[in-house]
Every structure is written in structure tokens, then in C-alpha cells.
Length: 375
Image 1 (cartoon, one colour):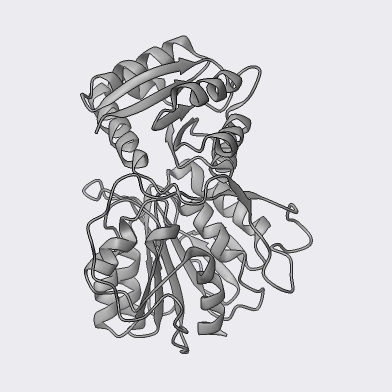
Image 2 (cartoon, rainbow, N blue to C red):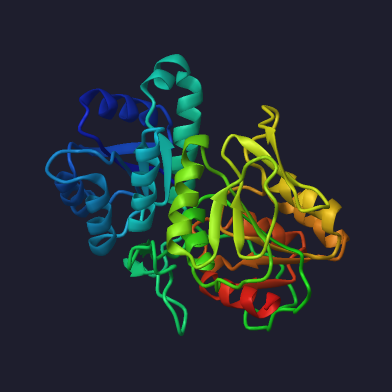
């Protein structure tokens, strides 16, 4: 199936280069371009593309406002381009909340220096998000759990939008389901660690899960989100403002403690020792993911045996499967997000197909089940 793409950017050079790169793939067709957010909405309505690539800083209407309008009027998977700065990270996270599926750094030097690498990455992203879940079109607010706000009163904004997610545009192969049903009560245990791994769609998914946890949540949490180094600090700060628990980007020597979620830093690897100390290691170029869910899960299996509750959320690929296998061998519990609520049903599907999932839950039930399992 040929993927139809609309390219949106106020830079003529960038529109041309992105269009040329995408058109070099015989299974991608650029059906149109737009120079600002208003044009993007009109073109999206007229051309009905499968994917839209979107800049965020444009005249007349910015990319975030355009994404929000597109999600309301003609929901379409959007790939954002962003700068590798703290401000670029903040704006990109806003775009993901508005409904964008994924993002790529907007780096002109890489386009000139590594054209083949850029082509491969961009075309792979476009193909993958063209198959993203389109169930429940439009936008939805992150609603507070019963009896409380989603944030610590002192610092958080009152509301944040989150994209509702769609039905897959291509059929997935049938997979064997675990015995535990989506409605089954979670197994209660004195867990020493909750470990959550995710990729595409993860920023919004993590926000939905973590905002449901109370300030007195008793189990330390580690988070592994595939994300560039420039983005994880801004993401941790955002979660910290929205959640009742504390959230921080991991630093070498951090100590796990109740009420704290520690986010693996982009470009590096995070491990946990038996004393609950975080170890941050350089990103190994031989590994596709930095941070890598398998690395953190594997270290948790070695340190905590059967006292880990691991959760694998939306994302491409199979990162987390081998780490989950080690955890399972030690007696720990593994949960997977269900297909219907995933943006990309890749990582959770790998867990289910390997028969590692003790339970499969919809995204919006996972936070509540974590409370039931750990409190």
C-alpha cells in the first residue's frame, strides 16, 4: 500500500528536501505541501493524506494549533519535526498532547551529512505511523482520578489534552492472548519496584498512567521511554508538574524511594543495583535504543528477583521482551497494554506473543490497577 503524505513547513528548502526524501521511497507519495498551519488544515481536508509531517513554528498558525484542529476535523497521524533544545522538547511534548503520533529532530546538518541515514529513518517513521491506531478520533482531556486532581496543587496546570487513538489501518496477525483477562483484578504483592517501558505514543501514555497514582504510592518507579537526550529532562519536568508523585530525570547514584518515578536519560542506559541505586552508563552504539528497556528490565531481574511489576506500553519493535523474559523467569509480574488503546501495538504485542504477559489492560485502567496491586 502506498502511503500518501502531506508535508507542512514554512521553509521552502525543508519542504523540498523532505518531499525529495519521501518520494525516493516507491511506497510513499507526497500528495501536497503547505506553508503554515491553516494551509495544513485545508490540505488535510482536501487531500486526505495517510500521514502529515509538521513543523511547529510557522506563520499564521503554529503546528500545535494545526494538529489540534486536524485531530478534531479529520484525524490523521502526524509526525512532528522539532529542534533538539529544551524549548523544542517542551513544544514537541505539547504537540504529542495535541494528537501528534511521533517526532523527529529537525537537523539540517544531518540531512546534508548523512542523507541515507536520514532517508531510512524518515521513511521508516512514516510507514510505521501510517499504521498507527486511529480508534476514538479527536482529543480528550486527561481526567483526574476519582476524588482528586491530576496534579500536586502547588505547581501543575489545570488541564492537559491528550490524543485519543484510532483503529489500526492494517490488520495485525492474530496473537495468543494471556490467560488473565483485561478485567481481571491484579495480583497484590509487596513489590520493590514498578518498571515501565515504552516508545512511540509513550509520552501521552505515561502521563495517563502516572497522573492516576496518589502521592503516597508506596513502590519506587523507573520509566524507560525511547527519547533523545535533549528531551528527557523536559519530559520529566512536565510529568513532575502534572503528577501527585514526584518525577525526575535519572542521575547516577539516585536512590529509589516511594513516591518517586525516575526517568532514564536519553542517549544513555539505566541500570538498578540490589541496594536500589541507579547506575547511568554511556549509550552503547551497538544497541538500537538508548535508553533500552531490556537493559533496565534485565538489571531489575538480577537485583529484585520476583519483586518487580513490569509494564510494557505502546511502542514500535520488541524492546522489553527479553528483559521481561528474565523478569518472568525470576517470578516477577508482567503487564502489557492492550491493542485497542496502543498508538503502535509493537512492544506489547511482542510480550503477548512470547506468552510473557500475566495481564493485558487498557491504558486508562493501568494506573488504577497499579494502585490496587501495590497499595
